[in-house]
Image (cartoon, rainbow, N blue to C red; front, top):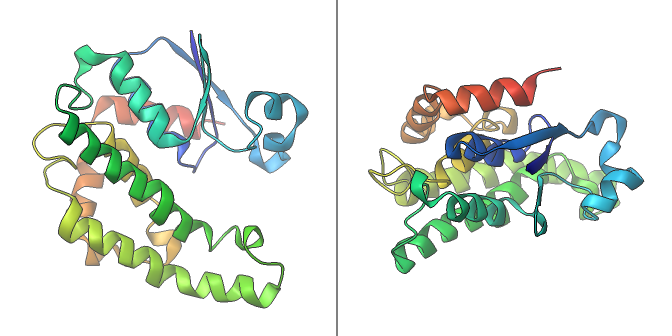
Length: 207
């Protein structure tokens, strides 16, 4: 049995969707961020980073969304969630997911987690003001250079798609005008038509 630790409105939704797409036998456990459960001794024993997602497998715990998505794709090869037989194409998928993780998500976090980088409240406010520009620049690159269409990698759906879908849902909250990115928004809308996405979204947002 695989166990996914998740929280609503976080990047863990991408892994949640991928597990649904894979038809995995898994259990989803919500981590209550409002109660600071991510810092509880019980959860830190699972993931000392104090963040989500965390995926408990028979061989141990995996963290970081790109790693979890790759693991899911490789664990269910018959679902064709990644180009596993093409090393270069698989590396391209990994590069896309790494960009979301290391650049776009970090830009987003500056608007909400400024204390990670500075103690000065004025610095936190400066970071928040920068978010629409920095996040918008990330989506501009995705819109015009990285999203091949109709799916991230082209004609084939992959684990990169739930990751883009997840972070694209943060666009409006980051002060980014979605009208600037019609291809990303078209992707977001088509993702919502997938039954696995609807199931994961409903489960992740349930009280």
